[in-house]
Image 1 (tube, rainbow, N blue to C red):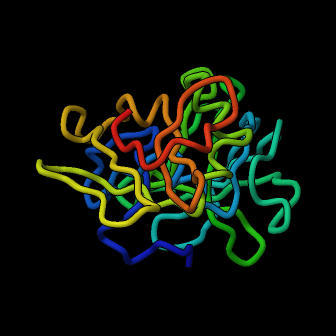
Image 2 (image 1 turned 180 degrees about the horizontal axis):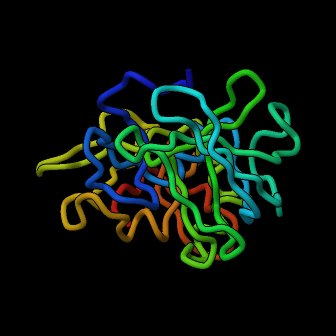
Image 3 (image 1 turned 180 degrees about the vertical axis):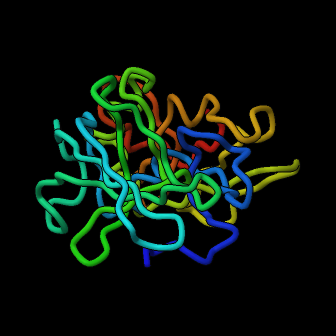
Length: 211
């Protein structure tokens, strides 16, 4: 049985796929959180797929060509296959074969990488430059920070390691401006603040929660 079978509501990140899939509900998550909470983060091209008899609806096993690994060297230094539920109602992920490069995130169970609709999965050419830089080094700098979701006003940070994420106020269910262009990075004294730019983070900035 694959790891997420039996769960009706799965908490994860905004992702590529059909948000309307029956019985698969995902809580939006900033790409940095998706990065920091994943065992594996890679860029890869799907080169094949097959359906195997595992679980009530089967499991899709994608064969991939790994281009680059951003996270997970100690877990699985090279990924050749990724596993997902065959049914979208169980958050199974549909990927195109021999067409696009993807940014893939997932978890490792019994030496296998699993992913799904509630993981952060996106076509590489759809990522912003800031997101690509985040994957390379900025997101690493913020894994000790907490991105606090704001669904309704008023919203406040309650500790120095929090960044207030307000995308949902105007872009509920979809990646917004902070998701596309900002990283929450730990600054001087343990304070976390939103960061965007080409230079290294300014350590004098303290808790600038509004980008």
